[in-house]
Image (cartoon, rainbow over all chains, first blue to last red; front, side, top):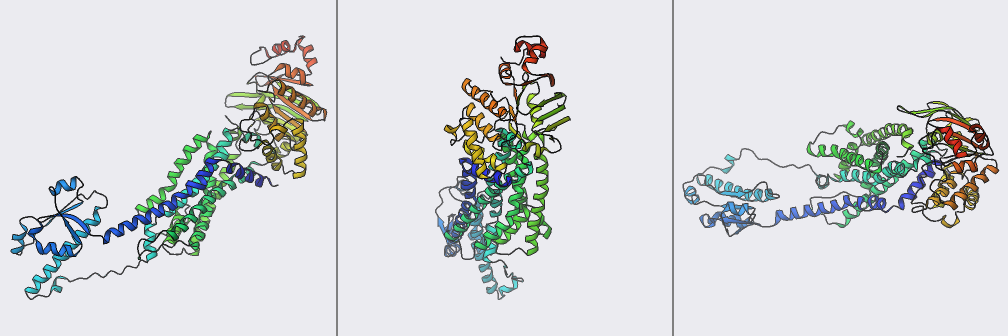
Length: 390
Length: 244
């Protein structure tokens, strides 16, 4: 048997017997992505559901503006009795938003001056913005209507004060809107690839060294680069298995979980799965090589683990930066490992198809990086220091 | 046959091996004796090409081990100081892994494995995972693994270290069998009795240098001491780091 294959088979067999590896690589590691997907869908559902539900807020002084309040009720506002001062109610979280119609209202209204109504809220509270926007929208609609009526009463067309009309021509599609919600998914695919191979990469280099089994292995008549290749293959297989499980579960979840709204369509089919896997292939080998390289520098399993965890944080920096600073994607960005994959998968999630050139860039960029990191790792693997344990 | 000439190896300022040279012949057991820290393990590591000597040469059956380490390792069976078994594999799987690394055909590797398993008396624990093995079981598995390709030259780093009396006797018998079948056996030890009992030739190392390279009998004559222990002490200058 070829020595590379011998190493590969032995590493796979040995690690299939390790509960810790199995659990992290094949069970809970791949579950995070699909679980987040399902949670996200439910979160969107409840958010959209909120947009159609009635607005329950305390209204103080409702009797001072009966017509206004009647109109607001028709728009979906359900006035609640107030139990304390508006400030106290907001502060004690008894109400998220409080509408107060001051005692000056009636006089201002009768005089034809702008009448003041007050909205109390705490804008640092989570989820309060949508309620504020809805109440403001209702009030503004009523204000415009009354203004138009006043103009008509003076014989002036209300169109006079509407010199500009903005017509929304939203070019998004149900799929691209879904892509926006699912922007976090590529990040999870990268993480799964990383965690899937991490235990193995660490165990096969730093772990073997710590258990002193690297010395007898290196004393056998097999060139070290062959041993390294066999080990890298095993790391890649575990990382990819982890990713495939994650992808399959996500695709299944996308079929089972009801879509939150008609104007959002999640495009997670077999084509998405296959293309994602294709884009991720060179990244899997790159991550395996870099993980092994990092583990080869460490003296112990624990030390390697520290480095690898740090590396995982470094790995997600591009995606975090991307989500905060939207940028125009140029073709060359696809050459950058991790980033290229993330942009490509984000496109797929939005129902778009990366061009042939972009796919080639994505594969070639990570492929070349794998070769470079591979050469460095072979070189490190040849060091005397590596085999000498403790 | 293993020929070593003028071997040097330094780690920073420390000269671990400082001009070691000897020959381990076929059909003989050569013992490398020295106190702890004398440079035995470092010397052996250079023989099986884990380390590159700073200076000097190693020849295994005439092959230059520095220039062609793979060819040299093919002719060597090595039990390193670090036994390093794979604890999630059984003893049999550990042995078979090395057979496949050597590219042996299944039929041949099975025959050799059976022969080694009988010679080392390891039938009872062959199919158990090596996790929790006794020291003796570990050494036996590691030796079977190291000799599965039937190497002509056998290097054993402190093979009886940590073994009980019965296991030690068994190991000595096994080494004699290897010698009698014409193998070149080189082993290191810091136990004088063992070296005196087993060896056809003793190479005494102290502070990175060879201080004697003789048969046990010649050694006694050279130092003028009847007792081997006294002979060693007079060679090394102190009994520190040696065990009776």
